[in-house]
Image 1: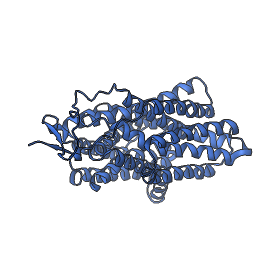
Image 2: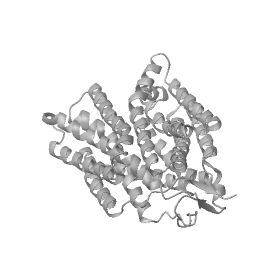
Image 3: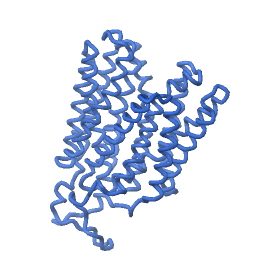
Length: 408
């Protein structure tokens, strides 16, 4: 079981690494490519577009041909695109490379969640997904430091060579360590029975009965999309909030963001223990309460210089709320799908990325201030999510594929 968890961690890590590692070299990249930093900042959106594009079909393919081939293909694409990134000579080529990187990272990201759905039951999956979130929270802190150390001795193309090396390692893990977990490709055509010692159960679901229109899945999809929109809105507007409104310097801003990342990391790593004693339903509600509390605090302080400590506490609540709820809601969203876990993972990823991009773009277009943009998603999103949690509770826990025996 350890091999599947380690491989899933590695597959997920490509996504944040490609976002955070090269940022320290952005000024030099812009200078060498003859573009402004603001022009190259669009690379973030292009990268997410590549992820969203591939998620549409990667999950379905992983359900049909298996998780392992998609993981290997995604890692190869990421590796090649990263190597190409070290050789680009203009901003247009740079953006194309970032899009292709997104395709590779998106494939690996989708497969990672599908693998965990294949191998773990609901309770263990929620714990592992919380730890996955903790590891991804480390990258915004560690990756820029690694990038800075690399650029002390090497030019910026070395950042993309480092990404290529990481993609290569993930590819090797997918080839030599990862085993295929999508056994339902064969078992879906066989008669499936449960262990004899278990109580009689209803007939096992098939691809035909695992509908994505069931209200439980849709509710968890909405909750996860709101949570990701909230955290990405915070990350997107944080420079304006912390430096422009609160008056922090660039160095103080970096320290503040490192501390919020630390809150996310510690909360995520504490979740496996919390899940042993507290019900998932309760933790999800706590997550929304923290979002709403953060909105109230930020609304009251307005990030004034006289209440900087309280404002930072409010921003930390956003990170804690996300870390408490994300792993649980993702686990619950995937739980109904034994045969279509790949498609379910794709739908969750696409919804999260598209809702975040649409929300930030639309409210920016309407001229909503950065602070009000953040307060709105926290307050309204927290209330909507809490209502969905209360009125659409989790069904009975599902069993994992490890607990199913196919007849010869």
